[in-house]
Image (cartoon, rainbow, N blue to C red; front, side, top):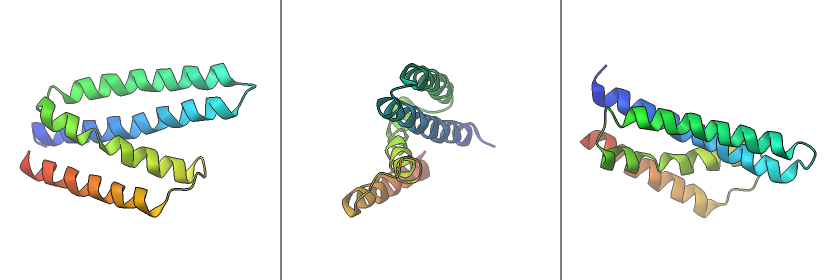
Length: 110
């Protein structure tokens, strides 16, 4: 596996991890009884995400890694829909598709 491919996989992983951090923080606003637990979990997940993303920077240029980081929007949309059961409208799905298309162009150019 090439250095660039490793970096790309790490950024994709960081984006997925960030999505879970966002979900945990949202849950903290809904679960008053265990609010501090969910906030702590969200912060811990963000710390892990930062470590994974920082590792990705060893393999990718910052401009590539940062652009691919927009995949966190895709992660959040999917997790919001399937874990939080929040409505995700057609415009947001179009935006997700555009992010995926743009990220694909970045990967091909990397």
